[in-house]
Structure formats: structure tokens, C-alpha cells
Image 1 (cartoon, rainbow, N blue to C red):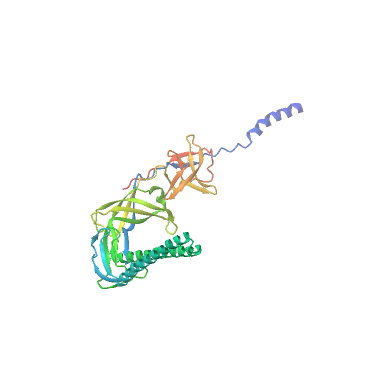
Image 2: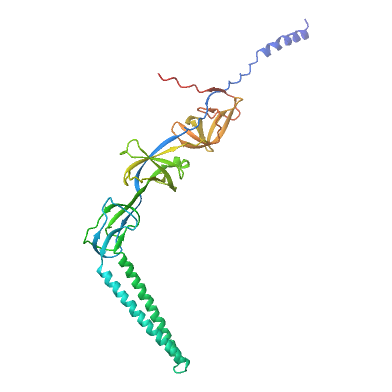
Length: 368
């Protein structure tokens, strides 16, 4: 065989053997397996009970407005009084004497003004006849105006003492119940409040109020006019109807609560101010909220994210807005659809568009 044909035969034999010996390409990795679940709506309704103290609709200490001695008191504790009812009569001789002196001062000022007016009118006629110089008329006019001002001041002083004299009768400022009496016949009474002891304490108990601190988490659910049930341990099984009258419109920083005032009717006088009570609010829940397990949420510098499985078995990362952390669940307030399939325990390997094998979360085993 010629050398050329031998070389050609060797090349034909060696060619296929070299292609068969080349290494094969590595197989593509299988798609990752993920477990998914679905968000759930919050409970349809829930009742939250908060502690509080029952207070009178209005309560005030009643002081005397003038100094004097107690001549007679007329109301006892527990007694119901109407607005304007006489509570205490005072004997105030100093006020009576000052009132008499002020009346005398008014009479004197009226006489002085009358005399000044007569002289002024007389000097007007004399000046018209050119009998006296005009500057003397100016003096008489100024004296008349001064006596008129003295009369106004005397009348104002008389009115002041008449008002003080009327204060010898201490009246109830509104209808209510006497809750304290600290007055006795013959006692010396100093006018005003400050460090002085009140004569009575009067409370309006036909209506009552309770102030409670609603947690910040319930801020969106509380509102004026919302019904509330008042529970008192001394009346087991009974729920007194009330409603939210107003809120402070500001969160207390120390407790993170919203001061809320609940009003309730007490026309039958069953409840008493000062009772410890509990206020039950029934919250309907926020229909826009969704609950997801806490292990479905991933956080980074941009915020909170949830990985979802699309219909074509690919991953889509959603930016979501979270509400409260309920321990095992997060409230999602935006960015998530109720029918979404959310991935449990998402890893950083899950990216948008990644194909996965999705399996639903198995149900919990039945309880024995």
C-alpha cells in the first residue's frame, strides 16, 4: 500500500474515534421546588375590651362667693337637686353694711350732680347776659361732668355690693346629685376657691362618661357614634349601652393609645360615678386587609417584599405595604391580591421570571 493511502485510511479511522471521546455538556439543573399558600382575610368581627372608670357627666365643687356665717344649709348627700335650688344661706353683716353705705354714697352723688347741674344751667344764663366771664361757665361745666362721673362710680359700687348680697344664697349651678357636704350651721365661710374647702360637691349623674385608651393599632376602626357596651362586675350579665362621643384626635406618646370618650345614659341611676368598668368595642375588621404568614415576607433596604407564583409557574416579586405584626401573621394593607399564591420561606435565589415547581402547603394533620 502506498504511503498516501495508508495516511488517508488512518485519518478516516481516527476521526470518528476523537468525536466520541469528547466530554458531554452538563445537564440543566432542575427548577427549584417552592411551597405556596394564599392570603386570608382578617376575622369578620372581633370584640376588644378596655378598662376605664365611670365619671359623672359634669362634677364641680361649690364654693361661697362672699364671706359670712352659715345661717342654714338645705341639701344632704345623695339628694337630687334641680338647677337653681337653694343649697346654703349665709349671714354676711359686713356685706349688708357695705351695701347700705354704697346706697348712701349713690344718694350723695345724685345730690352733688343735681347741684352741679343747677349751677351750670344758671351760669349759662349769666354768660348769655354778659354778666360773668365765659371761663367761669367752663369751670361749672367741668364740675358738672365730674359730679356725673362720681355718680356713675357710686352706682357701680352699689351694684357690686348688691351682687355680693345675692351671693349670700348659694344656688345649684345645674341639676344633679349632692355627692359631698362639707358645711355646718354657724361655720365661718371664706369666699372663693383656692385653698378653701367647698361647701358641696355636685355631680350630674343622669348621663355618664368613660374615658379609655384605644390602642394605636385600632386607630382606623374607632369613630364618633360607634356603639360600645359597658360592663360592670357588680352587675353580672348586664351590658349597658353607650357610644363613642369624641376622641382626642392625638395619640398619647407614652402609651401609644387614643383617648376616647364613651357616653351612656343613666336615667335610672343604676350606675355610680367612680365605678371601675370595662368598655367592649366590636370592630368589624378592615375588608382591605389581608393576612399572610410571617415567613412569606422578605425585607431589604427597599422595604418588604413577597414572592408569588404566577399561572405560568414563574416567580414574581411584589413590593407590599405592611400593617401590624400579629406574631404568626402580617397584615398586608397594599400591593397584594387576595388570590395570589405566596411563597413560604423565599430565598434570595428567587428572582422575577424564574421557573419553579410550585406545591401547595399541605393541610395540618387532624387533631386526635
